[in-house]
Length: 96
Image (tube, rainbow, N blue to C red; front, side):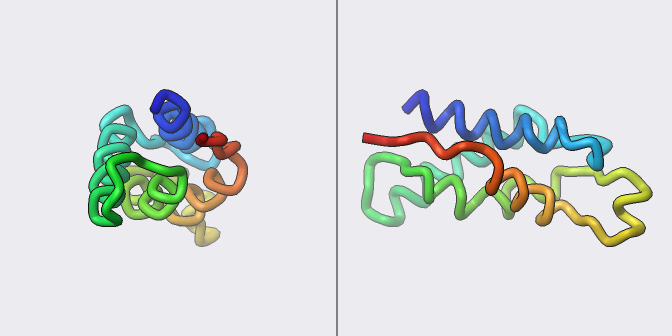
């Protein structure tokens, strides 16, 4: 679904636009997240992906791909926090 593809792209873009992040998730990160979401849907016996699939896998798929700037890193900021914040701020698409 194109709305979910846009959601994945928006989440990845949010990691790149965060001023505390030196290097955000790449297009490969978005591909990995989309693929993992499809796998989760299959494990849930669905042939379609829902936003909850993407949300459940965003942190494990994207957090390790981020490089945090030195000052925020020293203050304790880590990738999972950045991705979790992106999940809270990026609008979730309505799927019908």
